[in-house]
Length: 239
Image (tube, rainbow, N blue to C red; front, side, top):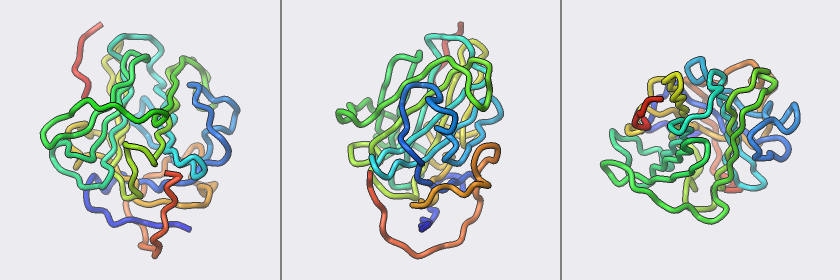
């Protein structure tokens, strides 16, 4: 079953289907076993990084594995960032229901919600966000590089709605001043520039969309369906 939402916001040139992950993900910052992250669409983050995204329909967790292939150093200003427009309302500034998750210096988690003009720091629910990052090689690149694994449980405060959902994924390497993002050229403060989770599938991702092929869908057929299972250095400002 595939259900596709109505695109109302974000950048429609960068959209992805939310597929169910196969097996249990271990959030330990590296590939626990060789097939752990072969079960989601790949999002190319401007060449220097790559993100795999899927949904665990047993734990209701949105799941990301981000590999920053060119980041091999540890810097206090390094960061990972995930932005979510829960109701896909878009806009030129972050609104209520827009969330931003920053992991700074590979150690500190900070969560924000939009207030109509900028971001306010909020406290996530207990157990809502689980993450780990590590310098390690992977099946995609054997040279040790920073890898983040993160899950957000959808039955809690952040991101509780079914797709369509706005999404931005970014990472920054302070050593080389490299910023990589999906959607390319997106702005953390402008949800209209983010990519889209355009729909969801209860089935595993088709084999042709797995490892080695980026799943960017600019147009999809509308399919009926209303059920969504809510198994729900240099100083630089984070952008």
